[in-house]
Image (tube, rainbow, N blue to C red; front, side, top):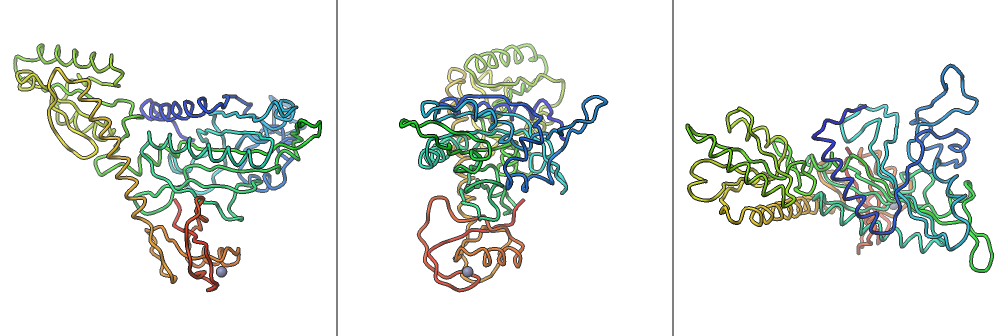
Length: 436
Ligand code: ZN
């Protein structure tokens, strides 16, 4: 299990803030369900259980007593929420039911754990919705994709949407859309997923509603999940050899002010630095004045590692010129802003940084795709090729090439060619990559 340091947790909290903002503004209500789930509830959906059986932690004792009904430490919350949903949903007027929670979930990872990417205690966002029909649930998925777009704009993370293969979909789902981003080594990292459940869970959990004609129907459900992998993706996608490069919307400090003290000028420079700090903070810009008794060079180094988007330097020359000197973390560009324009000037640069990071990352994601018509594996690329859609061909492709079949594009693409395995004509393109 990982420990979140204050700096890392601040980043995560900013990410959560954007998630909450998007979910709240689309009519989702935040809820909080118990961490422990009775085995009897957990066992209701067979496919789901098969998928999670080997990954869950169990509570077997309460105090000194062995429990009659063991408790599962939530791996995800369907089985905690849906018994309640069956009480909450009565009539078609209760629909849609749109909820979400941001909690920790637990999965017993047996492979080597890696911070942010493969962890046993997961900081997790999950939304759960109920709808009157399959079409209404499908519309929810379309809304989820708009929500995703808005959040990723803040994190400057590019992504691709793939309908996962039948053998890779979420246990119990009708279908799963995987959200993937390319890491610098060419490997694909799944950063979230959206699921359409149809009535696969509402039948075992008996979530029904009375329609306008008095008939009882099962609800159609969707879920949407993302985790601290978003922070892992941000570090991987944007970082360089000097350290992190954080997108301004989620950086704990968007600017850091480094006073360049020279003999006899300490008071004057510190006074001016405080003034600029107050100005920026009052304008809502998260600002740190680094007044430690260290050489400026070692301060530069520290804040570069931590990925602060904009560094402001203030020395006696700057004060004489009635200006500040700045350095951008994303591209190293340096310049000056006049003292009168500090707030609008800094805001403008932060926006430019965000835009540059967003565009640069998207360009890399797009440039990483290569279309192949024969089995010529390029391990550091995302491969696009024809696939007849059969499980046999798909699995063979995965096994022979040690690649993950990411699925078919969620937004259909025009394609005509041959299945790369069996040679059958197909209008379906599939994507594959090594996964993290
Ligand atoms: Zn085939």
